[in-house]
Length: 90
Image (cartoon, rainbow, N blue to C red):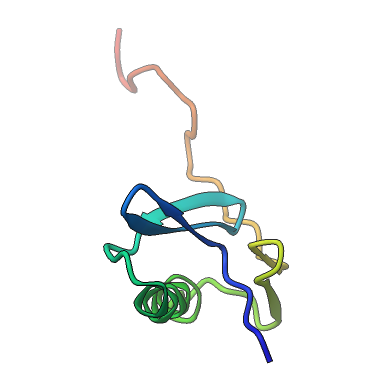
């Protein structure tokens, strides 16, 4: 069985390039050895996905297309969000 990871060699170092929760992630794996890059990429993906408290109960990590899919709850808006004035100013 082959595991497809979103890693590539750029110059003399491997990089991880994916999207998680709609945000692009590019990270150097700081190695020129493919096997070490794979181990570091799996560890990094675990850190970026499994250790997040805001992940939904069900999600899908699509390594072929480098996408994390899930239904995240909407974050509540902060009071006065986008308000540029000062309260109490005369």
